Length: 300
Length: 256
Image (cartoon, rainbow over all chains, first blue to last red; front, side, top):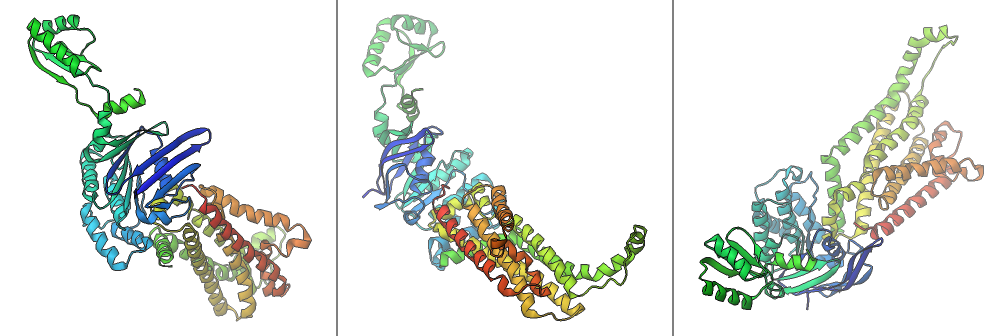
């Protein structure tokens, strides 16, 4: 059974259709990257999963139970980390986790034990000051601790790394990776390197629809050829090649790039180089990246 | 029940740590002291002003104060205490929308009606504490300086204003379940009183309106009896219940 099942989901704000017939299925114990530009509808979708926003059309099922707007029954399976987690600033981290544990219906002894464990996991075990003095990164880490407190089966993280420095980002990604295997993670972001680093599967949201969905490898394989690059040792060889074999882009004095050309074309170029005795440093296919694919899908 | 208690505890911790509790307690005690104090110093003030007043053609002689002067001050000051209470507490839910602090709590599985009930219980507890503290301070000073008034009349009279406080609390919750801005909350709560005052121009219904309860000083002076307030007490209680029920219904459908 899928941990999260979304079928024919639509949502509009006034005349603006934010989500248009969205279908998504997430299996258990995977890290699922939910990518899209700012304003693509990622947060809106997440809020509908959490029952915080009304659904215009379609259904959402979490662990087989239907999400009903305004009711929180399905939230017992979910841990949620908002993009900017907000806490009661007058509380200490331990007090906040105690409140979250009580609200989740956990036993007192379990709350204490789990809070200590999670504060250690996120590196806040010795922080006894009140939350209003926390940095953005500390709040994000406390956000993960509160989201994982009740051992959720589905962890929803809304752009958890977008406002963090590289160290903070690495810490958050390491924490998310550490829960893989126990918890299903739905992770929205527009930082594609983060997705490539930790996600098993991805879905690309554009103009309210899922444009691409699958494992990272499957998705990358969908991309048209990235072309190849030739790095010459002498600039006049590059000039000659540019005239001899059309369709290149000049990257610098000695480098040529042939976009959207495959291995066959690269072999043809290699034959030409060998015939004319051009001296080259290297010739290589450009690696298929999520970023290139993303740009291709959104038409930029 | 455990989740409701946990959220009520959080509300009280917030009142303590944000300084609202101590502020309201101090204000309540000050108002409590002010009532007999103003009554006590009025003859002295009048004496001080008598020569100026004589120049203006007014003669002040044998100005006497008694326990009723102190209670009159009480009934003048408690509406002010209620206004201060409403201003301070009007942000109780709107600040949670504005800061986004409810999102974590609701996604933890707290049922929405419990948010409304916990905040209502907290405000009723706080109003009870502040109002009766103000009353108690005035009452004890009145006994000390003057005499024991008919306790039943004093309690009945004071209870009428207390019930108005409960109505204000329920309207704060009602407005907060619709609006995200605390000025709108203040507007709705104040608007309810303005409407009640406007309707009180109609003699046939004026005795059933909540604002009739502001006249409960008349129970002490003997110009009105408690049974003349029963209609407005019942209407106020019913209105409070309706406002709370509507708050829950609106809040259940509120996009957060």
